[in-house]
Image 1 (cartoon, rainbow, N blue to C red):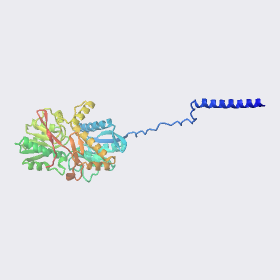
Image 2 (cartoon, rainbow, N blue to C red):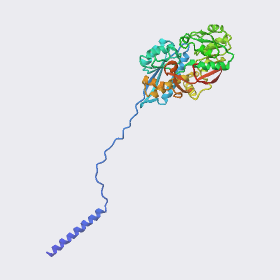
Image 3 (cartoon, helix red, strand yellow):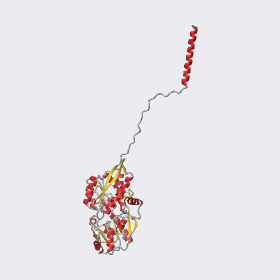
Image 4 (cartoon, rainbow, N blue to C red):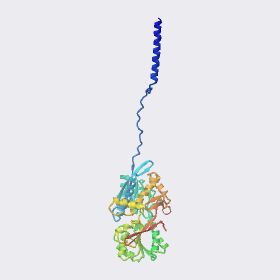
Length: 420
């Protein structure tokens, strides 16, 4: 009995030792990690793609055939060069939406009916929301008669200041991003007096459309204020190419100088006058670049215009010329820089408005009345016209005078526009 008790006690001791040993062994081993559910697989955060660019269609009705077809083609290229550039930069952003531009030009054949037909196509077939209406007054009238009822923002280019086709309170959707060419004659008369003090008499050349404007007498008034006399106004048809008969009548007045009102065909005028023996000064107040006259008449002399000189361009004009040269084979025309500006000014208005609504864009442009509010290839400019036209919808910028002597251009300078 005693032996059994001793065996039992020995077993108890052995079991206790084994339990203690197990505890030592276990405490010396690393604790296995707690079993957890594997983390749920998560998809990467979705990135928000910017909306695809939308397209804005800008149309133009231009005289791309006929006697001034070269002007219409030049206008279309000036516009296209600008829109190509802005599209290369990704277009414009309005309210988080990116827009690029599609430019479409149609030949209006230099007629009101042609402009109306072209405007209908551009607006209703091509979806144009902005419309360049033309170069001549009747073209602008034809295009605006279609654009206004359709609620389209309409742009007049070189319409006669103060004419029925020009900006006014009665034309709420018509804007003119071009300066009033008649204001250039204040600069021209001052230059005439300074350079040709012997000149006392002038004959003015004009088309019927110019004499129909409310400001038809501004040239005699400007001349009289400077002690000069306008002997006569001789008329010519806008389709004329041979001016010999017209200048036979002009020279019968024996003028000291001749002013050609906004013709763009001044070289043809000069040739006829020169062949009939006139050697006095002549100028064309058209903003066409001086090189365009030399393309027509390389021997022209004693002549000036209100366009820039191709050999003295601003940096931005130079860029326009470089783009023209890269895209087209025929010679560059500096007037394309002014047309480039017209497209650029429209976009500046859209960007300021942050809207494509025609009324919002017009309101934005009408507020850009301080020098520098508008940028052009000519430098800082602004929108004005309230005093003369009853609305601020006309471009004011520096006006160049470029003289041509024996076929060589000389930029006389850039001058402030005025009407005095």
